Image 1 (cartoon, helix red, strand yellow):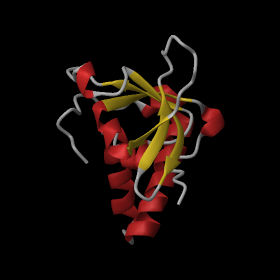
Image 2 (spheres, helix red, strand yellow; image 1 turned 60 degrees about the vertical axis):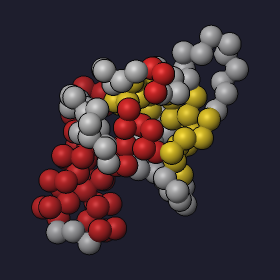
Image 3 (cartoon, one colour; image 1 turned 180 degrees about the vertical axis):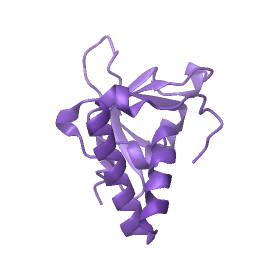
Image 4 (spheres, helix red, strand yellow; image 1 turned 90 degrees about the vertical axis):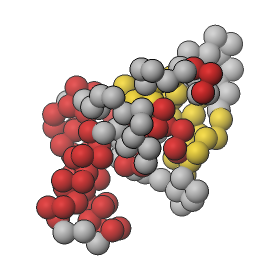
Length: 136
């Protein structure tokens, strides 16, 4: 994960509310514990750190909107904001659209997950709430 553009914490509790944010963190921790064979305490600490850092690897999911980070040139990114429609695991990528596109065509693009390192999570539609729901 590249952290060169990470200049602020992702306030999951403000985006989702404290209860749902806690559920997301615990789910991420469970995934890290299971997939990486980590002790429970370490998995929980890493989940908190990575989610707060806005790591797309643990956060990216359908129903989210990511906004370009401060200091990132729009010419280096596909759009100012990206709406996530689907996440795929191999290779890690997301299907996104530009929610601000004026034409309203809703064109969906496939991007490598690492592109979201240029963005910060700004909203998460709780109807789609499932952290890290990657399709194999």
